[in-house]
Length: 503
Image (cartoon, rainbow, N blue to C red; front, side):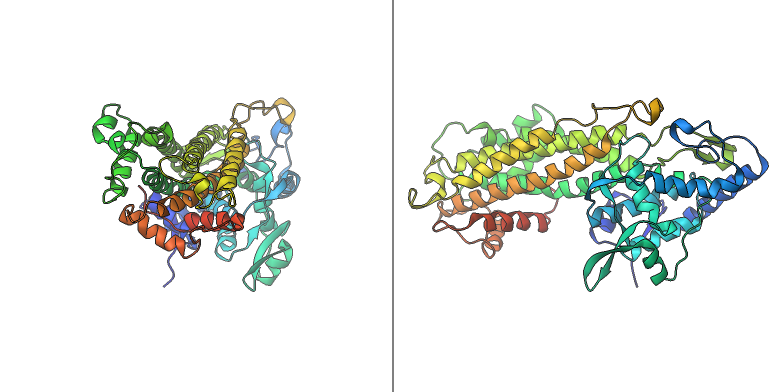
């Protein structure tokens, strides 16, 4: 029996959502969500039938055209025009996994029944998700304030038979016209009713998809950062006294205490950890791992709370409240909470990379009984000289990417939308930072494992030794110079694809 992630099920938690995303589960609506959607649509239909009142975006123009009233017989055309006119995305295409997550999040946002959409509209989005019919969406175009207008317009155009979609053919994704794909599946284009176009493109699902994906991936990034740092501690013959619990409880930051505990646990049975030490103190990049990694961990915890809250939120506009008999135009589409969290998240991830590169630098420096550049025959061989260059260059790029997007508001829509979050830019650059940090950590892992080869017969901990043994099946010990680009790519793939338990 196929397992579904049931949207609108009040028993769902963050772990259920994470499992659904990682396992690529199909989705369906909980009966209560279906009832809420139908109730919201019926209320809106009756309201429009019995009232001549102007409601923003339902029977008026959009943005600075909000005072222009549209006749009742043109309301469907108004919503179709909205999708067409707002599909102005440019730049790189959004990755498939994030488009699929956008579809899930759009269904989630509409499931509360406060958006006034038709049930069949939501069910068609579910059909797209479950059948891997993924609208072509572009990275650029959203200001992160009136919702993610341009990306969401591209996401929803295929509902009306417009735009293009990715479909799977012979295990490969190809781009096809949405109209053709609808016909192939026996589906008629959705005829949008009053407000539906606005409900579809108002919302933060582009930003939230990136943010949720990052939060899921950063759990593995954080776990690997601690394991790789532990391997470097042993490789550089560092002292363990700085990781004593007493030290970290004296300061009291949760992340710092947890990371110190994790380092001690990872190295608990290491022969190298208890070997005699040659230095009284170690460089900050080793000694201050709990303080740095821990602070990043705490920043991620803040971002996670924001993302979970946004997942459970209704972020379009206006909202319909059938029980209160109200249609209210507000600003829940403004991406400020996500923009701040994404900027903070990017900075937190970058710091894992920043301190990692410093440990790599120390490992290749020819200190503490390790040969220069971790090669047995330096001079003839350059060893790991240049991977550190690569890491340093990426760290510098991260510093540029971590300039906060949220402070860079700009006026749009003829002055009506005079403060925007730029959360979409924060989202796309945070994803680049995530990818960069995995590369930086992959390079440190290469160097730490090579350094540990020179410490034999003494061994690191069981956990690190086991991971090294698995890694050596892919990347052997460096005996003499070879094409290290391939080793870097293999190392990065190793840590990205092997998910460690959270630590």
